[in-house]
Amino acid sequence: MVRPSRAPAATLCQTGGVDPISLIALAAILVVGLVLLGLLDRRPKPPKGAYPTTRDANDPAPTGSTAVLDRDEKTDVAVVEPVAPAAPAEPEIVEPEAPATPALDRPEPAGSRLARLRARLVKSNNIFGKGLLALLSRDTIDDDVWDEVEETLLMADLGTEPTMELVDRLRERVTVEGTRSPEQVRTLLREELAAMVDPSMDRRLAATRKDGRPAVMMVVGVNGVGKTTTVGKIARVLVAEERQVVLGAADTFRAAAAEQLATWGARVGVDTVKSDQDGADPASVAFEAVRVGIEQESDVVIIDTAGRLQNKSNLMDELGKIKRVVEKQAEVDEVLLVLDATTGQNGLTQAKVFAEVVDITGIVLTKLDGTAKGGIVVAIQRQLGVPVKLIGLGEGADDLAPFDAEGFVDALLEP
Image 1 (cartoon, rainbow, N blue to C red):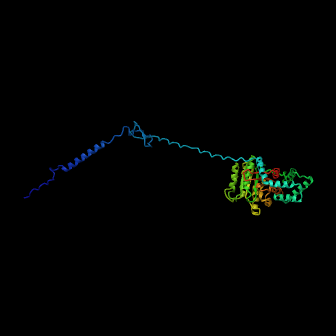
Image 2: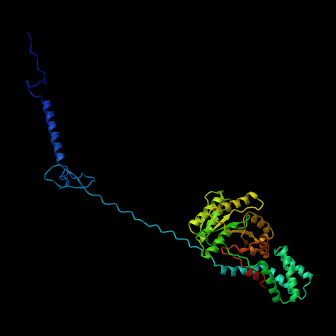
Image 3: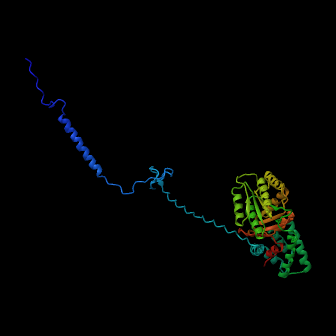
């Protein structure tokens, strides 16, 4: 006999009934859902008007984070209207202060220079003048006295030939006139010295425009006589006379020569033409300086040249080349030879060699205050047949002045 099987304890109560565990799980899910809905409902509400209203879809889209919105009745499309960003503050423009125009030097006029330089010449040469006056004022003037006069003149660098000529004239006049008073002797000596210095020589600088072009001036000389400084001082002399000047820095071999000349020019408002390269062709620089002078309608172009030894033929030939190149567009009107008065008779040799290469038209005698040898003026003029046109008696910017023959002799014989 077959026994019926027992149903397990965990079986469903009815066929097709619900499992109690499932019911419990469903109930738990419902409870959790209700709790979550309650929490969400407790979030803070945004203030009224915080959300955008609608605008026309054709309005521009927002470009910023802040917007002003409205509602368009014809559409429900929300469009953000941008708020124009604030214009950035314009930067403050600070006008730079214009650089102060450097004050130009006002060179001394020739008149005041001559008076001041004459006073210096009196001090530097009074031994020369007083020595001669003392000798010629003696009660008895014999051969020994004339020998001393001759020696004094030679020591003053008058030169052998001019000394002998002057002594002969003085002896004749003293013998004939029989004068002995210091004043009469001074007058006599002044007349003879002035005749030797020759006031009739034309000592004017060629610094005036002619034929529609500027005058061209070249400055030459040996090393160390101060040519560049002299060119700068000549520019000051001409500026004081209201001349328009252009400087040409054709000394391209000496370091900083061009800058030195440009500094001299800038002090009186004068343009300087120079090359940016050391060792450039000096003839091309000189040519360009003349071109600029013609273009600017200047009165004069002054060309500084490199110092050269008179026994160096290649350097002297180059000097001739500069002159030839310049004359392709303008005639060279003035060639000034700068000589150091302290070199005495050695300066005569230099002058002779330069005169063979270029036509010297005038002499600039510098450092005349450092020597009692004022007779060098006569010796140089006799050697070259050209006048001393300018003299320098110091290191100052205005210590260069036109040479005045009679004033020079008066200073030599100042008691």
